[in-house]
Length: 303
Ligand SMILES: Cc1cc2nc3c(=O)[nH]c(=O)nc-3n(C[C@H](O)[C@H](O)[C@H](O)COP(=O)(O)OP(=O)(O)OC[C@H]3O[C@@H](n4cnc5c(N)ncnc54)[C@H](O)[C@@H]3O)c2cc1C
Image (cartoon, rainbow, N blue to C red; front, side, top):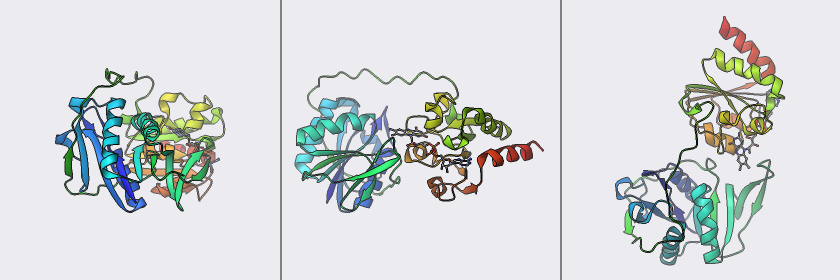
């Protein structure tokens, strides 16, 4: 089994998600090689073969050219799998590569399954297991689903010439307009999940956040229901945070939420269900009704 990992590089920086690809490859077993459109000055801690194209020469975002580089590397390495992160970079390139290779594409993999891959469905409430029916397959992995793994070592670099142009001209990145709260700077975040029950209960969680000197965060269903503004959302489609203390109130611990908060220094989860997946990342799991526990804690902090 051989995997070609497509590293991620943006705005002059190697992204940590590149090492999630290594975590995936480690679980998959077998060999791997990596392709990175990046920079000589920022080589990954990866002791395998690294196909490197210069982002300054071919552009960080040039799907036609990047596809060409990937296909060239596929021809040299003959991998069983070409693996991307399910990011805006990966979800743009992966279908182009799959179509060119006439290969199956499996998107948003969250785990390995017996002979196949588990992917989320029904808004990540269920998982289905699929097996590619072609000899090669193009895969995208859900950010946060596989551990950040630094294989270590110095890569054996094979330089790729970045020749040609493409049908798109990359103009630049523009940061989303900052509105509402910037959770990335908060030292304490107390987040409300669907377990808080209804909009009228959100102030109970906001009061705890205030008592701890922190900000209010939220899971996506809470935002989708209109209980809290999107600027408070934590997760893959919200903000990625790493506060000193993260308190998850009535949050189950779906991968998309964990991807946004699991780097927090200390995680407390309050959940009625002792088996909720959030328990796997929490330093402390309080098994309680959050609507009883949170106000009691706020009152105690006030004393
Ligand atoms: C493409 C995509 C992107 C996504 N992006 C995000 C994202 O950015 N952020 C995000 O959060 N989600 C995201 N999701 C959704 C994600 O998959 C989950 O559905 C979501 O995180 C679940 O939110 P939750 O934990 O609040 O709700 P649930 O999963 O419904 O969990 C509620 C929890 O509350 C507990 N509970 C219930 N009542 C109480 C009580 N009284 N006291 C204590 N505990 C109680 C339950 O035991 C349960 O564990 C995304 C999904 C997809 C498909």
